[in-house]
Length: 435
Ligand SMILES: Cc1cc2nc3c(=O)[nH]c(=O)nc-3n(C[C@H](O)[C@H](O)[C@H](O)COP(=O)(O)OP(=O)(O)OC[C@H]3O[C@@H](n4cnc5c(N)ncnc54)[C@H](O)[C@@H]3O)c2cc1C
Image 1 (cartoon, rainbow, N blue to C red):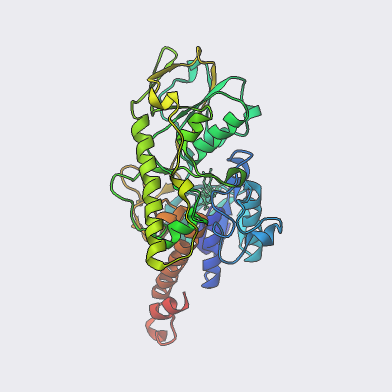
Image 2: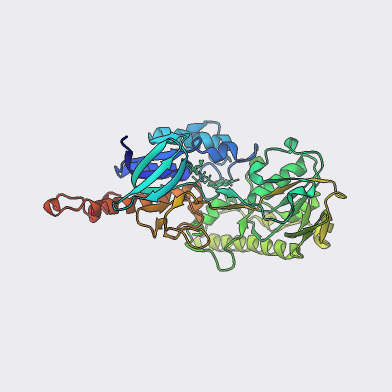
């Protein structure tokens, strides 16, 4: 039986796989995109019902398609609902005629012995590809730290499993993790009348907007989305922002004043009692300092450039500390507090266990340079900080995909080298100029 062959195989049809397809198509590179479920599946089935994009429609998108083309009701400053984001990617795939095959899972990838290329085993048969782009996402496997045993007598779920307040058993909820997912879920539960405990670790919390501009604009003009490396010591710091209900700044002290019980990092459990680290105040203070630093940088930018943007003194105001901040809880007896559910908004791990190639470090992380793997012919796309801070976001991945398509075109031109026709052969320079 003949085996299907393709030049470049892209695995995953989320934003990364589709951006890759656009740039490969533009460079005339034959390719195929395999998706185990549906296009933009994570936005359809792995996020809670009320989720909206964290960035406004004018910003969190690809250059070639606006959200208003998908749904005319979405204004440029709106935060599109998750279904609209998924529809956006479906429409984008149609617009660029992306060669996507859905419902096909890649099970195994290995190098072909003795000749170039890779053998890719899928749920629908084998494909051979000269190169492979792994676009399976920055957030692949939900991570729950092994703190509270399954038999603790409460429902435990990762944030990917949360849907809405009504879907949870009655009772109080402990949300662990105060990045964008954790804080948005905690706020939704509090607004639905639940008693909520929010376990707050280190975080950044930019203002939603300042002096009339959304924070995505500030991070852009201040060059922060394009920053190539994380500040030392800030490698794992999550951003707490929200586009919910039109968008608002996350101010943990304000949430505490409204009734949310803030606690430090969740770091232990015994006999029905969860213990918290004594770091709540420090985490809040660091978050506040991060917030103020951005406001200061924004003010300096306004002054330096003589911009006419309105003053915004409210952005620097907060509220008096609630009791949970003045005297943080060291422990919580789950039963006595009526906690029925724990939601772990504690992030994700990468999982490339299906890739049987020498492209990973001891921790299983891809070894790469801007997505070009140390294993020739393998590329990664959509990794956090792949080339810049914006790499795992919609607009950032598009730029990384462009770079990878460029690298693939250059490699193809070298491989096409033939002494008898080198005058006509596509030189690396031509490939670079075309890319
Ligand atoms: C709650 C949440 C909110 C976010 N909000 C925003 C936002 O507002 N703006 C923004 O820019 N970013 C946002 N992000 C970040 C980022 O945009 C998303 O995580 C996005 O889904 C990443 O896209 P991706 O294509 O890289 O990966 P994914 O969306 O994860 O796509 C990978 C695809 O690969 C498929 N796949 C995986 N393994 C296989 C396999 N073996 N075979 C075949 N197919 C496979 C999956 O089914 C999936 O469809 C958010 C992230 C989260 C978690």
